[in-house]
Length: 213
Image (cartoon, rainbow, N blue to C red; front, side, top):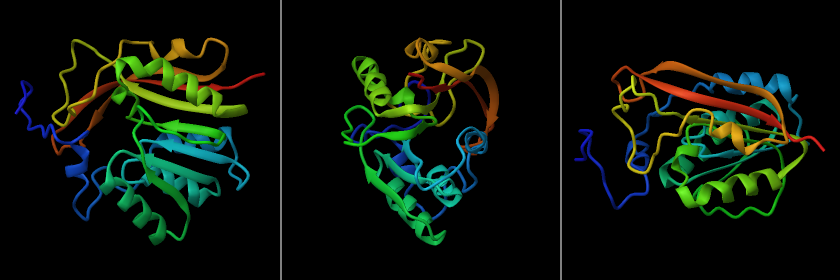
């Protein structure tokens, strides 16, 4: 048990491997509200390729595939990818789901949308610049990068399911990696979450940036 009062398994790269073991879905099956906003920005088409980084159990990736995008998705957890494939099959869609780590993934492809929610805070300090250089190069002209990250606020305690390798970011740091992109959205907000079964709050920065040439 660590100083915040929850058990950590140091043999795992993330405790979500354990939390995704059961038949149920830790995050539920409804897509994030962000996905509905995304559809308005980039109308779905099979020609539009999406990469979901840190897809968890697949609810957002499967939703986007159902809308008509061509979707690839990865997560570091075997159980998450297993359940992503299961959810895709149950919904009659295809998602190219595979296991990879946000800190060292290799993909030889380009995308119209690169999307990640609740995963950026797993980047190691020495991989942050590498990550943003990589995803920007992987984004097609006029494509979208849609990222969010939990940010540190002294008036908000760490959530009960805060994971071993997660790190809070300073306010607005996320926005500094896109000085030459057009910002479709840039904001910060506090919201209530029930993911652990215990109500708690997060503060999150959200960036939706479009690659202009």
